[in-house]
View 1: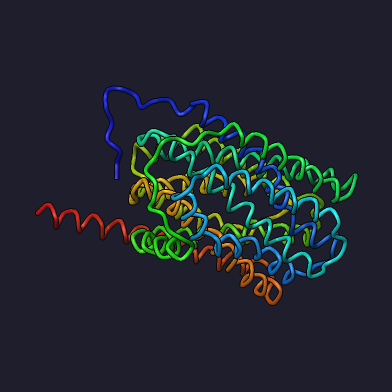
View 2: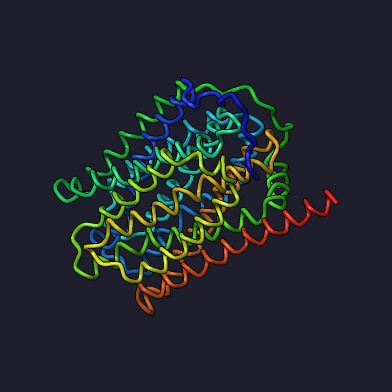
Length: 400
């Protein structure tokens, strides 16, 4: 779908409320992005195997997927801002608890569950507020700017936390994450919810049923996001032990390359999907995504930055385009469910991949992990393409 243009430009994105949401999310995502180094922490500080890393890293995504229907329903019935604050509180508690972990014990599982819950609450509350605030003709751009702010922390937090952990210990790195969560909680008080249609009152069971109703309508998008999460999880979880096994000492340059590319594509080129067509951009960028993941079999410590740059470019175009495409297919009163659904799908794919691919990495090594992840991403891109062809054919038949 190509958004029609007019002689007058759409209203500016940068309202006071939009800026407040972005700032609160940036602070939160510093805390959340510290845990992108979890595979290194598990491997170096706790002596975890590749299989252990896969299982522990699967927990946040599983938790996020399980609560997605209820989070979406709450947002549509009650509001978005309370979830932003609640997620910051959960991140603060989890970070304080991680400061005390010195061995691979069962305590890591509830802490990972709390991390997954915190991200699902704050991220979905924030991104849905962004879609409420943004002009319709700038929806992809707004989601892109929001994502760019997130991704900046994906690079900055590990780049800060890694040397802090090396010099002062992992407790210091987790302490900084706790402080960032407190800042996010304070900034969330500046956010105001725009006027919007609200869903009818209900309960948790009704939320679940209504979310699955939306899921049927946007199933190809849901499936594509599952595939995206699987590829993303494989890359972000297993590239670290892969290069560490090759003799690397630091792993954060991948995040730096990823951040630079994703920010440029989302901020500088974020309006392309709104102008060219969200489905078209999603299909083409997801195809590139699959190719980059396949190329990860050739990753070396010296090439971390360049692979991060390539992966960030594909992700920077795909993720906001697919989110905006999903919003097109849903009513304003279902927007919270739609956002929770596609982001829950991402976490479902992430969870499935790190569990399954952890076993593959343990049994066969890391290159087969990236090959399988690339195949999954390719199937997701094909699904979106075929759905677009079917929709176009239906539109032509209706016109005839």
